[in-house]
Image 1 (cartoon, rainbow, N blue to C red):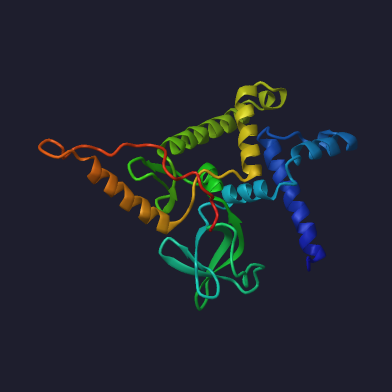
Image 2 (image 1 turned 90 degrees about the vertical axis):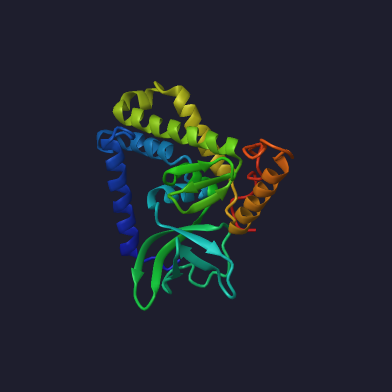
Length: 258
């Protein structure tokens, strides 16, 4: 894979440093205090989900946010943008010549300006990753939409959106508790909350996505909502304030591009 030995050594050192940071927070054991067999057992336990590319991408989405790009159809290659800014993938990046991506969003490590705006090290992530691990979400009930970080649009059932918002709150609460009480994190003292986290992990690993990212679908949903509102207004007087009924939207689709 054309990886230099120096780069591999650097990756190993970065992994050790990251482990040390998590150990300082009480989330992982201190390796220097363990024997060799216990070190290997601790590493296996901490990396028990390392065989899941979808989970690894979700971790990247959490760590690299708000470095997110929207993928739109293009002529020869996909068109990439961040909010209203058009960007390109740097020629040295692995995905530079990609003709398509499996999802509608990418995360990137670095953005620089040369003759144009380019990004390095991009990875496709799902709508579920952004919904669970992205920035602040705003639920627009009447429009069956969720807006993340004031620009990322997801079409989703309002009921599902509220459930995901509550789930995010539980996840953040669990992390705060684990950091505050490192012993409880390892001895099962937070078993109910840990069960929620394990359920989220399994959901991400299965690629279950409760939202679709599709600008055209958003427009269609808005038009349909206005039509429902007009149909819901009774004839005669006093019908001007009737609101459309909120049901399950069409947001149970896929999070990737179709």
